[in-house]
Image (cartoon, rainbow, N blue to C red):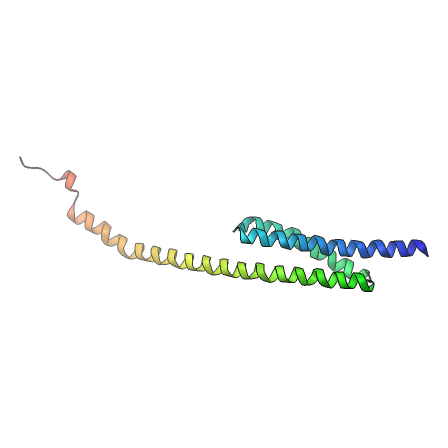
Amino acid sequence: MAASTTTRDDAQQTLIDTYTALLDSVMYMHELADNDQWAELIDQRTHYVLLVEKLRELDSSVTLESAAQQRKAELLEAILEQDVEIRRQLIARRDELGRLINVSQRQRNLHRAYAPQQAGGNELGGNDDQAPRSS
């Protein structure tokens, strides 16, 4: 009986430790978002997803005692708070990139509209450096 209790305790601790690792991961991702380190954030997302998959497996096979359930709830709340903030920052970044893309598209359209006229103006007017000079 003692061996099964130890195994159950170990399984509960592994589950709580994995939730703690997920919280650490999401806090790090939040820090990356705060520092506009978007590529690193995407790289970290892979680690985050792996932890979530591990939790999915553990949650289905481990039954938590009351104290562990309380700790899990606290960790989940903290994880979700961080996640909401990261999502807010990602949406702001997406909107910023959208504005930059729109500006770039407008500049490209203006260039396309006026570049033929500029090229035509140079051909008609000729190059002043090549014009014969009278002395």
